[in-house]
Image (cartoon, rainbow, N blue to C red; front, side):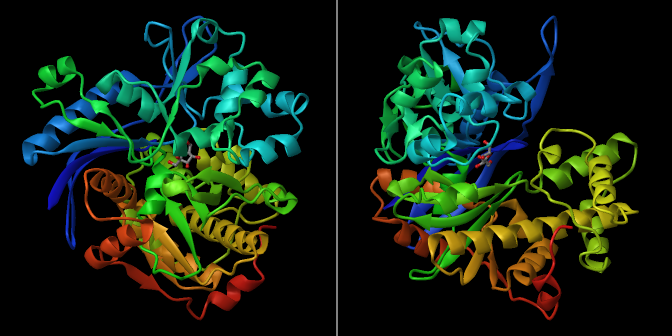
Length: 487
Ligand code: LFR
C-alpha cells in the first residue's frame, strides 16, 4: 500500500506545503509550494501591534494544497505551525480581529501580574511549561479587557484555526494546546481551574483531539472552489516542534537529545512522563506534549533568528549579504573571541541585532565583532554555548546521560554550527533531516490512513532508511570549549 499526503508546515518566516509518499520501505518528500511568512505591524489609532496575516497564510495554504494535488493526487492533508498564537471566534464562527504575533510587546510585564495570583510553583506543577513572556496564558491575560475577548466564544490555535476554515470543525490538538500554559500536563486536559484563577473564560477552550484523529473532510464549498475532492484533514502533531521530534531519526535504545533548529532552537529530550521537579522549574525546562503521549522536555534557545535578523539589518543598510560566503569566512574566525548570552530578552524582539550584540559585548567587557563574519561567528559560538548548557542541564535534571545530539530542521544544513555543537557538547552530532517537521507530519497522516507504522520507533526507522544524515564528531577543539562561559 502507498499513500500520498499534503503536509502543510508553517514556520515564523516561511510556510511550505510538501507532498509525502509513504509505502513499505518508502518515504519520499517533495516540495509543492513555499511562501514567505512574517509579522505585519499595524498602528492606526491604537498602539502599533505585530500581527500575523492569517488570511494571507490561509490563501497560500489552499494554493499549496492545490499545487500538491495537481502534482500527485493526495489522500489527506495535515497542518502544523509554530505554537502559542491563536485566533478568537465569536459564537457564530466569525474571527474577531487578527491573530497577534508572539513577538509583540503586549505581554511585557504580564508574567509578574499573573505571578501575584498564581505562584510560579503552582503554575509549573499544573502546566509544566517554561516561563516565556509570549505563552498563550500571558497573551490572553494581556487582552482580558480588550474588545476581542469580550465577544469571543472560542480560541483556536493557528493550525486548528486553518483546519476550522477548511472543514468547519472546531477542536484543539493536544501538542499545541499543551504550549498554552493553560493545559494540565498531568491530566492532559485544559487547566480550567487555572483559567478561572486568572480570569480567562474557560468556555474558550474547544474539545481536545489527538494527532492521528480525522478532523473532517474539506467543506464542499472549499473543495469546490479549489477544484479539490473533499479530502480528509487529519490532525498531526500540530505544534511544529512536536512533528519535528517525530522526525528525529534516533536509533532505538540510545540516550539522545535533539535540537530542532530553525527560527528557534528547541533543545531537549523525549520522555514518557513530565518532570515537574524544583530543578526542572529552576532550569526553566518545558514539558510540552508530544505525539503518542510523549513529553518533549526541552528549552527554547533563541536560535537562528538572531542570525537572520543580523542579515536583515545589514541588507537594510544596503550591504550585499551572501550567507554561504559569510559562513565560510566565519569558520576562519578564531573560536570564542566574543560570546553573548543569546537567551537574554534583548535578542527577542525584531530589530537591529548587530547593535544589540555590540552592546552586549561592551557590557561584558569584550571587544565587539568588527566584521559581518565576526558577528556570525559570535552568534554561532553563543548558540553552541547555549546548546551545551541546555544539554548538560537536561541530563542533570532528568538523571539520564546524553550520548548523541540530533540536529534536525534548517540548522542541520549549517555545517559550522553542527561542528561547533559537537565541539561544545563533547558528543557526536547527527545532522538531518532538514525537513524533519514535514516528515513527522507526513508519517502521522500515513499511519492514520492505515500504513503499518505502529509507533515512533517504526517511523524513525523508516526515516533512517530513506534519509541520509551527516555525522560530526567532537574535534581537537573540544577542549577549548570545556571551560568557556559567557562572561
Ligand atoms: C518553533 C516554535 C517553538 C515555540 C515558538 C513560538 O517554531 O513552535 O516551539 O516556542 O515557535 O511559537
